[in-house]
Length: 428
Image 1 (cartoon, rainbow, N blue to C red):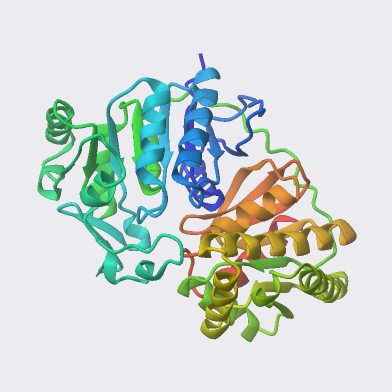
Image 2 (image 1 turned 45 degrees about the vertical axis):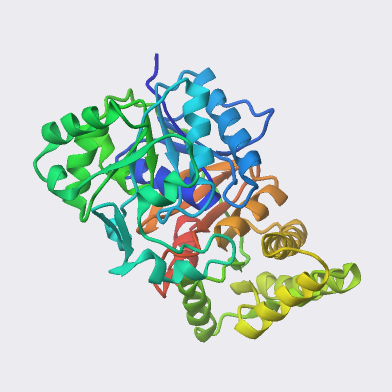
């Protein structure tokens, strides 16, 4: 039997992020968007199901992860990974519980640290670029504001199962000592979070945990796991990259994170034509339709001239606040407003792609990436090449396109410029 690794990811960009970690180690990785009727072809070493459940209600996210895990189990996966946000945003407890319940298991090891992206865990306390999680930009997340840094506490509030952690000093005593500590923790706890400060720590952790059936956490550990896994290689199906589109590259941004704000500002400063979606107009049907029509028409004109284009949700604080206030007056919560903005960006993108035949697309923001992908009929993608840490390109499934799906909080200031150049180099 092929020893396929089965992964569940709670958003589209995270699915690609962990796929990249395996593909960097010469594994073939494929992302598929979750659907109750999906049929998974076992043509990759790593199969990742994107449930797009981070912003769902907890009960719905549980059901998605439970059902997706069952699908991976049915195709013969022998090891499982529940990939979550690297700062624990989302329905963490529900989704971890769903995977264990689906598999009939009662223990999982969790590694959340992502040192290359500034996420470290020491004594169970999580930091982002040296700041405690509750003092980082993530404490202003519009849907899942992170108000504490103790990972055991964060997870324990979301599950009835028991949670513990293993500290850095134990990790640095080596894999065998760490493995013994994990086994001891297993006797009394269901979830065991493990400290890591740097990549060398992750290597030790990977050696100690690689043969556990259920792993959870960020994608960073997946860069080290292949050193210790025994996976039968599957020949890559990536033989067709015949993208001959003469149009420019379209960039669509729906993220409000500081990183994406800086990236869109940098792209605009490079004189790339840009159109801004007024999020205050997503509530009234006629205003929304007119906004879609105007932005789409302008973007098509530039793209046909071979120019790259940026379409973005207005990220000015006053506009974001006014949008929330309008939604509040209409009885609409922040999460639903966010989804309305993503849906409008998806409608604009679909109109542009259908009318131009565009084949190169960059999307910034996890929810936006998932919403646009579904609107375009993209069922997933094969992971191609790394552009920056945790940020790969992909060959879409379901529509012939080269895509880059970027997590809102990832990437250097020049990332969007690099992503455009990267897609152009792939399609030469």
